[in-house]
Length: 343
Image 1 (cartoon, rainbow, N blue to C red):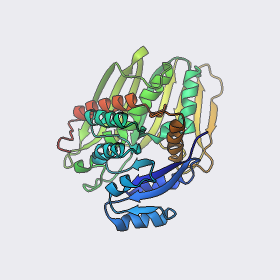
Image 2: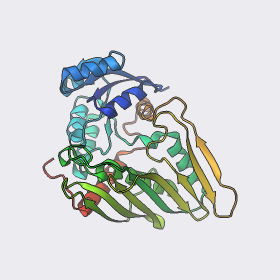
Image 3: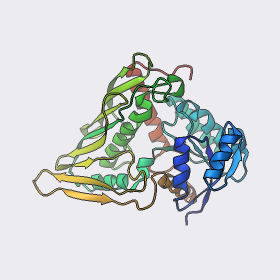
Image 4: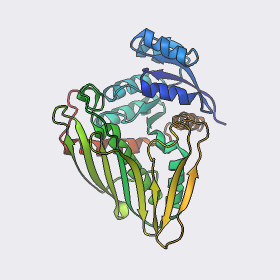
């Protein structure tokens, strides 16, 4: 039986608010505290979400004895430090993606979680949604034959704003870390499903990208990964060129169209995927329900379920996969000409 879990939220931005909203819809999670750099911000957040305790610092949140697990939703550059501090405080950690700015920092966070015996999960929320679980099931069952090509694109067309976190280097800006991590994660997960694993490591990776001329962070990027068995993955991400958030999985017998791969059921809505067959039979439309449950609720319940089993990793997002994702992102950022030195 899965036990209830007391959560603290570290920071009060949009993503933290979305997590708190969905946490209330989870089967296991209870918000007990929130921490912010300014007490007034924590107090407002607490009032908005049922009167949780408000702490005027992140340190105070981590010292709260009632908090069992911490959700970290700060900008990317602060993920590593606070994930390590949370582990040292004995708190289980759900940290927004990307887990850190670089592979070396991801390794440090994983080492801290192992050293202190806490659960650590990188918050790729889409992996826990029933749509992704259905995709894995279809691929493993051979619904489209042998997987040959994975195409995944996460592009959000935006007006350039030098102060926006998507473009601002000091906040870990750039499309690759913010958006490209999703196609990378998706391709590893689906290639792994085709090979009977939780994820797959590429045997080849080529990438490029374009830096914004004034911001100096990547604004559009593409990559090609080659996975064992000759599975290819075409990946793209960007903030100024396309408005395309989609994926397709092509196999020897057919293909699967996934119109909304990375934010399925964001507001509790149903999703639809289509399985096409190359033999000319009528495509199968598969509806994926998520009635009344926001996307982030699945993460909270997955953390609680893993802890109830005595695990410190969530099967859909293991530590070795986070380390591999970070390595691919390092290569992609470098190929695009970017870096996060000094952050």
